[in-house]
Image (tube, rainbow, N blue to C red):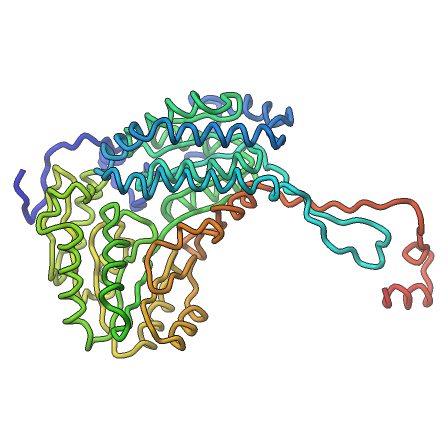
Length: 497
């Protein structure tokens, strides 16, 4: 297939439920375009009931430390025994190389489950807290108890890891779960539906494949926790569904993550790390640098070095490079290509819609109201904007919705401090991109329209737990000062206490 500057109408092997209806979803992360129909009567549901999972949870079996460890160990076994099959599925869905599949999905998940196994006992221990004098003598502590049956809705860009890592947290916290993979990543969804029942407790965990209809039906069910990874549009729908049942919800969304480059820093290393973070998974990463800001005087040298580094990492012919992936489907490929209309492309831009391929592409000085600057890109396009000063770059970021991540490359400690203090983002990483996700001690989550709630490590355990407050008292020293009838003396004593 020849590369061209126009889109192709050829058929690709990925299905797309929106495309089949002639209606495109604005939610680039979602597996399908949902609507308010999840309020419909549950009588017509074809998805299997969650009542068996509710009964399993009610039995108390999932609360035991030994059960949780057994399930986590089985999940690790799933990962280690099926590495080749998982890698093959990820390549089929997104063209991921073996190395990228291991780094971002399989190895990452193994590290996460190992961390949970190692620390679970300490996380489960009741946490002692102090007790005010008025309640003496007594003991106060907090117990992390599981929430119940969780719904985990994954995304297609990291279709294995974004299902498995929240599942690890749900298991560690002692919950049951229904896992809904994205139907756009067909091969991975099918593999998960085959492997999960083989390794995990079938009375506690279930995989539900399907598209819009199945997701809509799941959202109508009374889960005890809703966990969604995707975009803002469907995130609102999931939150509305959770509100119907007054259930807690975690939304891992996205947004336009900025990357500020101080031209006086170590540009060679900075550019290498920016290229790695931006074009990994063909740019389909929720925390990938979405746009780059640099002072005008550094643009020429920076852009030339950036293009050279792109060629170094992905060669002169990235289409033939085994380390460069593909866009999930033709619809998303066409969406990305449309962002290049009327903008100044200084590198890349070649594409082959039939192959779901878009070359690593660099755009300079797009209008701030252009689609490429209004929509989350979620692909291999990097716009660069210039400013007169560092302060003006910071002000520009603050004027926009809060991002999932923000990046700063600088050797200026004062600028670094002010950036961390002034910019509200889910996460901030200084002098690198994406790598902060490797630290499971850091909670990962958004703020504002980029999400709510967090997970990874202890944060994930807490997300799927209720922090139950407990106070234990004996019957000695029952002071009458708190009981009626009251008096001025009792009031004075209460104030002192």
